[in-house]
Length: 203
Ligand SMILES: Nc1ncnc2c1ncn2[C@@H]1O[C@H](COP(=O)(O)OP(=O)(O)O)[C@@H](O)[C@H]1O
Ligand SMILES: [Mg+2]
Image (cartoon, rainbow, N blue to C red; front, side, top):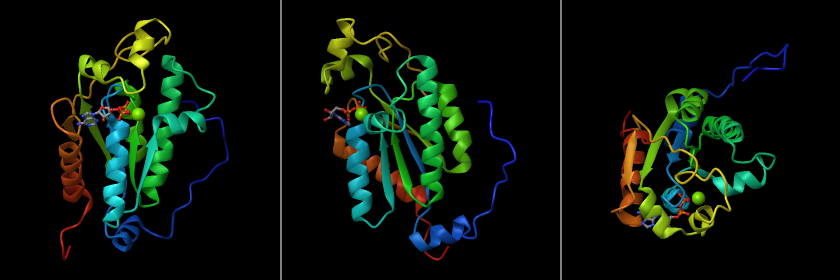
């Protein structure tokens, strides 16, 4: 990405992030979900948001379709547009996380390089979570009827059918959404959050 703006200077916040985290009782950061359409990103993201919120966490979901209605309304599904979509989301997620939220992003984000770029935008508070379910499983679920449409040739560049999905090589967490229930998967991720976002008492 070529930066067009010139004569700009970054300004330091006067609330350091550890002070913000202490006030919130937990760290801020990004839970970056990635997985095929139908792998469970939306289902798990919103369930997790509710469960964490009820426990007093600052938490907010950025979800695929909601963002495509607004921030990325001008983008389609070509590789270049997907890249720009994920770049914007990566930057927005980093801002939300900087504000102290546990930010759950729920996008297919099929390209490794794009996820790497999102990680760079957030640095050490980026957690890649791979929702692992194979195409056959996702196609059987087909919650939005998209696979059916894609098979009929009505959706070009459909991930897993006519566009690639590059599985993560070193995700922080892999959640097997094929053979485990929604409840089990949410509990797995809650455990991960307890481990990585909540400081031990007295620390
Ligand atoms: N372990 C699981 N985790 C998430 N979703 C699951 C799981 N098992 C079955 N499902 C079902 O799979 C579908 C996932 O759809 P959705 O959350 O919209 O996927 P995505 O947002 O990744 O496209 C839902 O119908 C959900 O009920
Ligand atoms: Mg979804």
